[in-house]
Length: 478
Picture 1 (cartoon, rainbow, N blue to C red):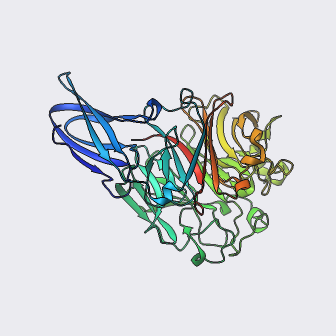
Picture 2 (picture 1 turned 60 degrees about the vertical axis):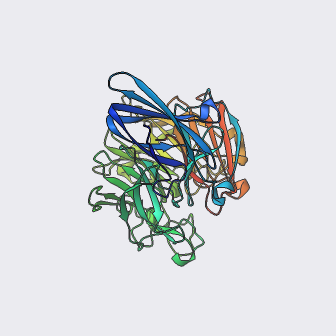
Picture 3 (picture 1 turned 180 degrees about the vertical axis):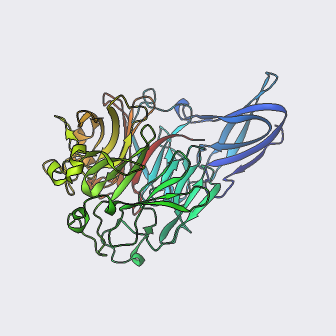
């Protein structure tokens, strides 16, 4: 302990982290505490394993600060040592310091925080970062990331990066961690890369990406990703990637699943490059309880659950007339219960873990409330909201059991991006990611209780071009 090796930003990609290495004479477990400006912003972590050689990843430092970090060592014989060290960090780069972070409310007694929780901002492009309950940036990556920011079962992260920050194509899916160490890189050809920028006529005009919206980890560790197939129909294909070999093990082409007229006769949106973005799949969720997947398809105002093995429907959430679906699918179309909002242009459809109860299950989603093809034209554009729905496959109904956002009206309307997450204490974290009234240069992250009491409210602005918050996550950072 007297000769600790310390290295701030050990891998050159994560300036508010450090690696601390030391040895003890006998086996011990280690925990550390990064002193915060308040009790609620102090970060503590237990390090797994009892050993004599300790390699401690310290996460959650303040920028431009002599951070006080206290280590507690518990030995096998029962006695305890403690040591405090100082870790000096550099100032934030302008791309981070220029972001305006306005915390309007932070009731830390009611927020879902724990000992080491931060709110991660996964952006459409630019550097991902995380803030504490006071709005201070406590983690960021210097690597530009596009949409994908997922925590794997082993605690690592999935991110989608470019070869370098000045390149135009996001085509490296990396398995990394909060310190910036890279464990695996899956490099994609840029032949099928594309952009959500409908005004681009060709790829040379701006950034494109090989994986456009989402990647999830399957139970066997393989990865399921949203891609385009290189045809004029875009963002309507998924691939299963072997985690070990990077082999594409399965291709799921939604053009072979949905009725042909849904894409051959699609006219709801137009693109300068001639691409037809008829589906615009923007999320995937795997439900292990019944080996199924739930997808969100923005440009069809559709959320749908499929048997993952057969890709046959289980239920369909859409206001599209039941009679307009194939006859064999009509029995899967859900009816919206009285008082239930019709989703439009939605994002981030997720099955609530453990919610299955007989014929019922619960999902959350972010309802942008833009009527793209089948949404509610009467309410479209008046608000956006986080939603929770009870799906009943016995009565084939969808019932709204919670929602928040209507009261904020057009001020929080977002015609694109956004997320909703049910937190561990029953609160909800909502990302109003692209505030239209501010031309997308602001994102509003709000945490509310089940009774819609606002306990955390932060607005981020001056986010740079396409630097708005695609999804917000409350994570136990370590």
